[in-house]
Length: 210
Ligand SMILES: Nc1ncnc2c1ncn2[C@@H]1O[C@H](COP(=O)(O)OP(=O)(O)O)[C@@H](O)[C@H]1O
Ligand SMILES: Nc1ccn([C@@H]2O[C@H](COP(=O)(O)OP(=O)(O)O)[C@@H](O)[C@H]2O)c(=O)n1
Image (tube, rainbow, N blue to C red; front, side, top):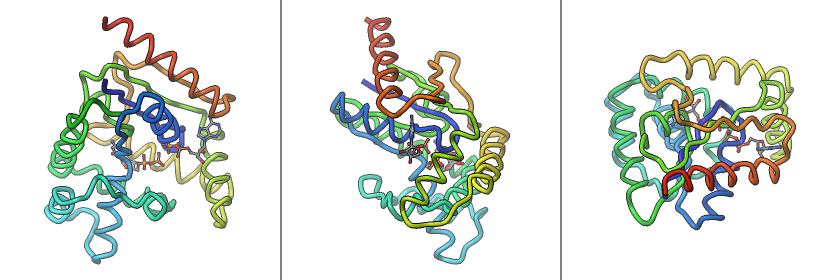
């Protein structure tokens, strides 16, 4: 079984993807981390974020099994990732790696921006996870503070809005729901409630396929 989860920044995609992967015993790839890893590597090596050749080389050699979530989830890395993510040739190389990961083994859960539309258009179940902007900013700011960082809800709201706009307006694989995706708005839902709603969606999608 393949499960595709997309949605805007800090909507809860990763949390749901991890929970669903554990529940169904599937492998999980947070594709946001793959873009973050490339952005972080370009910055660390002093290269510009539009160096497509370098980005492709990093994508082709990236170890998808050992992405350092703790380091890559730093707030600033998201901005670098979304700048790298606009380059079509680089996205092609990245999508090839993500698809290969998904096809290995008995099934997988992938979360990102273009999983239902581009990476896994034939996924068994597609979820488009949202929450209103203020809720997403509040959750991300709380996450940063819980790790000892400083963050105001207002500043995070502006950062997420800028990144969502870049992701939605880019020409290649923009952030959008697949036509056959099930919308899950988690505003006002706690993690457990959102997880149960996600399982319901997957079960219905599975039943429709049989
Ligand atoms: N339904 C929810 N209610 C409250 N907090 C949530 C919910 N879903 C996710 N979170 C929290 O919000 C933050 C962002 O969630 P995450 O799964 O990382 O989002 P994304 O992968 O879409 O960026 C995390 O700290 C997570 O624990
Ligand atoms: N499938 C994907 C996943 C992420 N990305 C890019 O990578 C950035 C970081 O993604 P992420 O999922 O880690 O971001 P958060 O939602 O966790 O803040 C996004 O803003 C996108 O620009 C993408 O283009 N396609």
